[in-house]
Structure formats: structure tokens, C-alpha cells
Image (cartoon, rainbow, N blue to C red; front, side):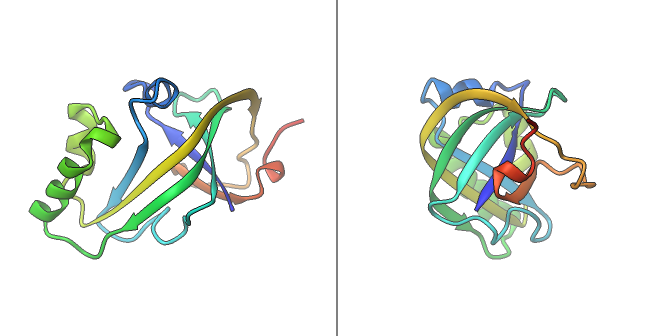
Length: 142
């Protein structure tokens, strides 16, 4: 399964993957929303900055996935703190994710910068930061 993953451009998440300082992605919410339960080891992630340019800039393979059960705020904060070395969250990102009832942690391997290409997300009406596209060629612009 292929996924398009939006990265926080302001906190330079893509650059952190490129330089190897970051190896994990976090998503969280009050309920079970994407990518909860939809990502598996071996899936391919395609990275795009959340700055509106719509260009895929890198790929990686999912190495490990953790989908939390419903948690109390302090449990959630503890999990984020334990994984901060891999996550490399800014203070603003930490405030955004830590404390959520449900957290998904996705560890990646084999990050590669690739020849950039645009995608067509017109079939995805919701402005989410995670698109399970199944096959990247379905959304790749020629």
C-alpha cells in the first residue's frame, strides 16, 4: 500500500529525514482517524511538504507501526516523550500531538530523496495530512 504523507514544512520535517536526525512520524487525534490502523510494515510512504506546492520529494519504507489504545493525557505525553529522539518534534509540534487520546507512531527506514513529481489530489476532498492512495501511480501527474 502506498501513502502520501504531508510533512510540516515550517519545522523542516523533510530536511530532518534527509539528514537522518528523524526516523519516525506521529499522528494523533481524539478519535481513531487516518492513518490509524491503515499502515503496515512494508508500506511505502511518499513525502510532500504541507506548503501547497503539491510535489512529492521523498520516499521511505514503513519499518514499525504503533497504534495506541485510548489513552489518558499523561500516558499520551509519556509515549511522545519516549520517542522524541526519533520524532524530533519542535515545541509547537509536541504541543500539537502530545496528549491526544489516540496516537499512531510510524518508524521508517530507507528514506530516499527522489526525482520530484506532482500529484493530483482532486479525488481526495478532505484536506487531510495523510492520503492512503493504494498505488502512487493513480495520483501521479504525468
